[in-house]
Structure formats: C-alpha cells, structure tokens
Length: 320
Image (tube, rainbow, N blue to C red; front, side):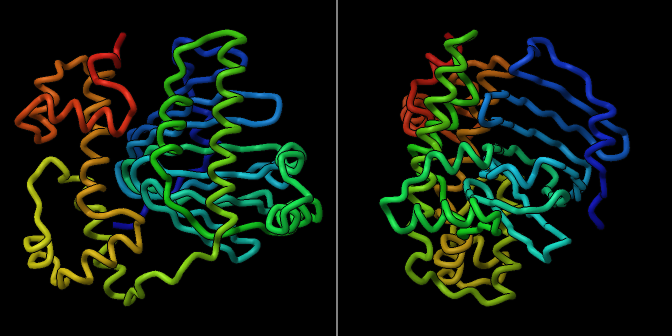
C-alpha cells in the first residue's frame, strides 16, 4: 500500500487544544477519517523546543513540512517507537531512524518530508543555532569543528547513534515532569542540557568501529521483522522460529538486527513491552498484575524488576 501524503499545515488547521495547554506548554491533537490521528506536546523555552509527537496513521505516511526558521535550528530527533526518515529534497539528502536511534541535524533549508511508520512516538529537540554554538568549546577539535560548521551554516550530519539507558531515563523524566510553573522550566532546561551532553559525547566518536556488513536483501527482511515484532511483541518469539519464518539464518538475524537497530531482538521486544506497560498503567489505569500478564510476565515481581530497569522506578510509584 502506498504511503498517505499529508501537509503539516493541513494537520495544524484541524488542531484542537487539549486541557492543560499554556503559553509555554502546548498540547494539541488532530484527526481525520482519511489519515488517522496525530498529536503534539510542545514545551517552549527561550533557546529550544521540546516536542513529543504521537501518531496513529491508517497507513505509512509522508508528512510535508515547511519551516522558515529551520536554518536557525539544530535538530535532534529520536523515535521512541516506530520509525522515521527525513528527506530534504532541495539538497538531495535523506536520513533514516529506527526506534531508540538518534541523530543530530543542521540543514540550511526551509522544507522537508517526514516518512513515518503507521504508529510512531517521536522525541524532537529543536535548539536555536546560536545557543547550540554557545554550548560548544574551542578547546577540543571535534567541538571546534562542529562549532565552525554551524557558524558557517554548513550541513551537519554525524550519522546515527543508539539511545543509551541514561539518555532514555532523561527522556522519560522530560516527558513526564512532575513539577510546574517556573520550577518546570528549570527542571526541563537541566534535563535538556544533560541530554545534549550525552548526545554530543556519543556523536563526537562517529565514525565508530566497523559494523556487521548487511546485504541489501537482508536489510529489507530485517526491516520487515522489526515492523512485525512491533505489532506482535506480546507473542512468544525465538531466533529459530524467526529464522524459519523469514528465511534468514540465525547469525545474520542476530548480527544484522543489532547492526541495523543498535539492540538485540529480545532487548527490542522488552522495550516494546515496557513502553506498552507504561501506557496501560498511566493511560488505562490497569492494575500491575493485569499489566504483568498482558505483556507476558507470569510473575508480577519479575515484571516490576524489568520495569524499574527501564524507567528507574517501581511501577507502583508511577501514578503517585
């Protein structure tokens, strides 16, 4: 099925505010019989914007966006679930990101396209170029080189990285801040700076050591497996079963998946289960023992331990 094409301005024209919207923290939603649902939460700061996008499209989607301020922003993009590719047609550039992968972009352009999977949850940090430059040092060569590129308004793309557990914990804190008013502004600024520091610490080491070499056909099969597991993460899976179903030997399956998505198949399934568990606890108000069974844990204590490893807190504390 061909992807649905949507203009972001059309989504904005349908936007309806959600309760709790304020001058510095917007939350709005839009929906259409043609393409599905889309919502954004945006925190506005003097020097950056923190944006969470949650979309449930009826098919894969191509979202056309025009942003006159794009050339004055550095963008850090990280899908929390689903996948996204960014295309800058005027420059002939295209970058792809899977779940828990992040990259840093500075593109002196004003229009781009996002190709999004049917279900996607996306973290987008947009930082003023001048402010980002002020965070960089002259004293280290990688930082000075990046600083020079941004000052000269040259394209910046350092490849992609895997969101490490500390980065994921920061994102969780950012998107579920338990403070309000001026304290919320202070809290988010501290978390954003911590996130940028971890992000830069990773990106300064790119290019990294050579990874497993993927065949073109294997990459397409692995992408199918990645999508299918996102829909069937509650089921039991084994490497032998996946190898047989998709016609890929176990070595190529293990090494290829980790090379392409930066995690093992079973860590990926665990991430999907924990994200779903958090949704069930927060949004649907289910009991821990119910959630534990639904995501495949027979023992609620084992579920609680896995949840704490992922989010840094026991699930019983989540709603307090």
